[in-house]
Image 1 (cartoon, rainbow, N blue to C red):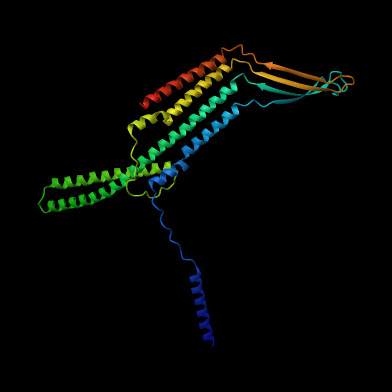
Image 2 (cartoon, rainbow, N blue to C red; image 1 turned 90 degrees about the vertical axis):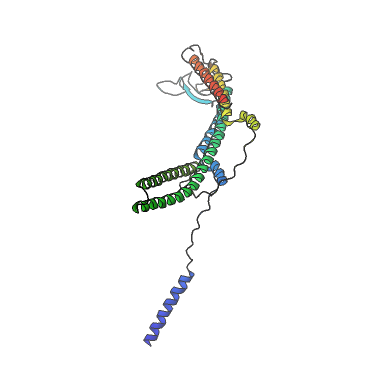
Length: 338
């Protein structure tokens, strides 16, 4: 009876383990990722490249700064206690004591805000074209790196086959030399050919590694998946006349043009420094002395830019020098496209 119970218990335990094992999910075999195509890499490039993303944020910052620069400064509010008696500090003890609440607004020199906003707007446009130029450069670098990687991958297959043949040829030359059927020069020549092929194999392997590293850097990827085999389909280049007509819209040229306009607006900003700033203010004073009336004060303050040799003149000369440098850069960029 005890034996029967023990056997029954053992069978129940085995059955329980079998049912549990059957209920457990089978380990899933992770399928390798699909090879990356050039079209997928190009689409990903515009979304993840840190250089492009950073340049886009810089362009957005300049656009917001242009809006802020064209606004008036914030007004100022002041609270002042005037002519309080020193012995009591009571406003009702002095006939001229009062509490004043005032507000003032600074008005920058005429045209300064407008020209400063224009300067930043042109810099924002230049940053926009810089982003476009960076995207074009990155796209070209991605395509060149892709072609290098594909070429190197195919070349490695050919070189490995040739190396096997060269190894067999060197072994055959050595066997003939040992049999006295070939001179030692044939053995040395075969070994030199084998070594030269090994060196070429290392060079192509380094080219493939560098190309893949460049692609991974452009795509901001820590580990680059396998690239799709075969040469990608590249559209035919446009006609020469079409390319010539499109040179005026070259991003680098448009960027240089926008920077040139920004430098011109900077000259106007420097010229506005010769005009005075105006501050308008007003205040209301409350008197607590019996019989004394309340008082209202209003007026303006004007800056006097009369000593200009060390500040305004230098600022204007610097702005004009930057404008000339920007003009030369635009001319150089135009000539480089001819």
